[in-house]
Amino acid sequence: MELDGRVALITGAGSGIGQAMVQAFSRAGALIVAADISQARLDALDPGKNLLTVQGDVSVPADVDRMLDAALKAHGRIDVLCNNAGVPDLFQGADDCTDEQWEASLAVNLTAAFLASRLALRDMLKRRAGVIINTASVASFRGGEGGVAYTVAKHGLIGLTRSIAAMYGDDGIRCVAICPGPTTTGITELNVGRRAAGLFSPRGQATAALTAPIRRRWAEPSEIAELALFLASDRASALNGCAIPADSGRMVF
Image (cartoon, rainbow, N blue to C red; front, side, top):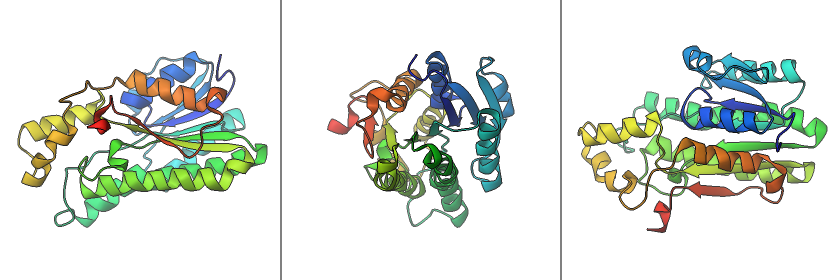
C-alpha cells in the first residue's frame, strides 16, 4: 500500500475533493486526520481506526494550530499535508470587491495554507521528510477564472508552493500544487448555477464561457484525489515545485 502507515492531514475533508482524498488515502493505508468546518460532514465520513476528525475553520489561525496539534498528538508526526480547503468568490472585479470579501478569500484560500505549512514544516524538518500538496486552481494561471480575490489567492498559492519547494527540497521535503478546472463539487455547481441565474455582475457573466465545460467534461473529485495520492507517494519523488493542471484539457484552448 503506497502510503501504508503514513500520517496525512487533509483540510476541507468533509466534501468534494477533500472527501475523495480521504477515501483514496485511506485505501492506500494512510492514517488520516480529516479537518473540516462542518462537524456534520465529518461525521458522515466512513469511520475507521485510521480516521481522526477535527472540526475547525481554516480562516481562524487558532483552529489551524489545533488541527496540526491533533495530528501530532495522535500520531507523533505529519508525513503528508493536503491544504485543500477553499472557498469561491462572487466574481467581483478590483473595483467592487469589498475589504471583507478580499480578506475572507485570502484567509481561506492562501493564508490558511501558509499557516498549516509553517507548522507542518517544523515537524517535517526534524525527520527531513514530508510532502505538502496544495489544492490550487486553473485560476492560478489565468485572469478570468474567478474574481480578483480568488484569482490573487490562487496565484499566491503557486508562489507559496514554489517557495517551499525551493527552500526545503534539500531537506527531503516536497511541495506541489494541483490545479483543478471545473470539478463536480458543490462549489463549482453553486458558481455555475449563480452565473446561469444571472446573479453575477456583467463582468462575471462575461467570464462564464471560460469556466463552462464547453469542450471538455468536468473532472470527478476521485480523479483529483488519485492525482494527490500519486503526488504524496514515493512514485512522485522527482516532482517538486510543480503546479499540475487537472482541468480535462481546457487550458489547451
